[in-house]
Length: 115
Length: 113
Image 1 (cartoon, each protein chain N blue to C red):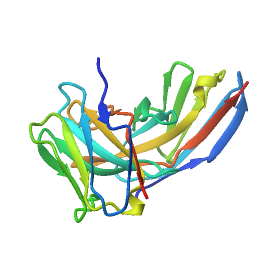
Image 2: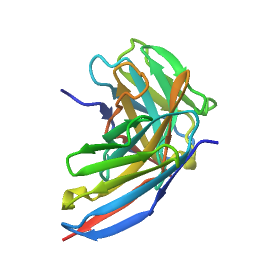
Image 3: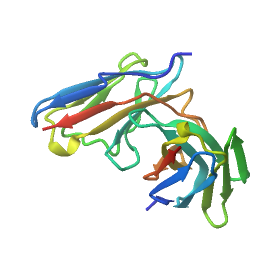
C-alpha cells in the first residue's frame, strides 16, 4: 500500500515570496490533515479536510495561508507572503474516516526555510 | 488549555538496554492516547493507540501503559537497537464532536553501540 506522498521535500525561499506544497493521501482516505512542525516542537494542526470540505481550520493563519482539496483527493497548501517564522516542516497526514481512535498516516513532510 | 508534557527531553542509552519514556497530560475530554516514532527527516509513525479502558498495549519491543486516573503514560522499549534512535511523541486525543489531537514535544532517544 502506497503511503502519503508529499512534494517537494525541501524548499528555500526569501521572505515575502509565495510557496506551495502538495500532498496525495493514501488511496481511499477521506480525511486529510496539514500540520506545521517547528524544530523541537510537536506538530500543530493547520487544517483538516473531510473529503473536499473543511472540518477544522481554526489554527490556520488565514491572512497568509490557504489550502484546498478540490476533488477530495490530493491537496495543496499555500503560503503567500512567507515570513521568517514560517520556517518549519509541513506534514500531511491522512486517515480513513477521521473517526475517533483512528490511526493517522503521515507523509515525510516538506522542509521549508524562509530566508 | 490542553497540554501534553514529555520527559526526559532527550535520552542516550547503550544498545541492548531498556528505557522508559514518560508522558503526562491535561486533556479533556479524554478520548485516546497515542505514541508515535519520528525518525529524523521523516513523518511520525504510529506505535500504539490506547483508549480509556486500556492500560497497556504492546507493539513488538514497544510497550505503552496508560493510567487514566493520574493522567500518565509511559513507553517502554526493551532491548534497544540502533534503529530505535528517533523522537518519540506522545499524542492525546479529545473528542468533543470532532476529535482534536494534542501533541507533546517529544523525547529524543539516541542509542549508541
